[in-house]
Image (cartoon, rainbow, N blue to C red; front, side, top):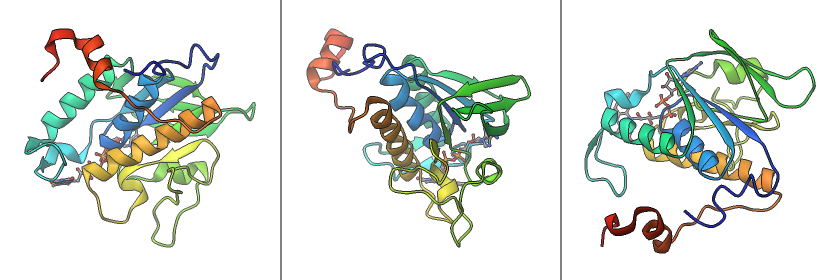
Length: 209
Ligand SMILES: Cc1cc2nc3c(=O)[nH]c(=O)nc-3n(C[C@H](O)[C@H](O)[C@H](O)COP(=O)(O)OP(=O)(O)OC[C@H]3O[C@@H](n4cnc5c(N)ncnc54)[C@H](O)[C@@H]3O)c2cc1C
């Protein structure tokens, strides 16, 4: 973990992020925002396509079952403090009446956040309801940073592509969205770099040679 990690509390920001969808795209976004100090909540209905997949094409991992991959990813985000609401489906996302931030509703309650990352797979209804612009191919239109036409709303993973659906791409989308949020919060371009000394400090003798 870098010295900059969890620096948000130090720089006075209390920005919050809600991620809708806990597949590879959503959990990747949540990992980066929580690891770097933003209050992060993930709502996930657990319908990820990863439960049907077996990966041989995820760089750096030879072979892994999709469900096993998700179990590791869930443990990873939990260890960085993500509030992961498994099984809690989001029913609506709306701009707050104050004009500042968003209100996210589920069957269990309403939650507020400064930023929303949509990661709902091929289901694009929430983006449509929010008024996000869609492309001619009827997917959510985003820029390279994964921000939609609605300020502070991001869309990631399968919902921004008509096909070309891959776990590695979804994970990259989530990371890009999170880093753009972090750059916005911190007021300068932001990256999340760690070095071997960080691993030694955290894991001590357990660090692999
Ligand atoms: C049979 C099959 C095999 C595949 N094999 C491979 C492979 O070998 N390699 C590879 O790279 N990719 C493979 N894929 C594709 C891969 O699974 C997807 O690219 C990846 O899962 C997309 O990630 P995502 O996060 O965008 O969406 P998903 O993984 O679909 O996750 C979306 C999540 O959002 C949740 N959600 C949706 N709406 C809401 C809501 N309103 N509230 C709360 N939660 C919500 C869903 O329940 C789901 O858990 C395969 C897919 C299939 C179907």
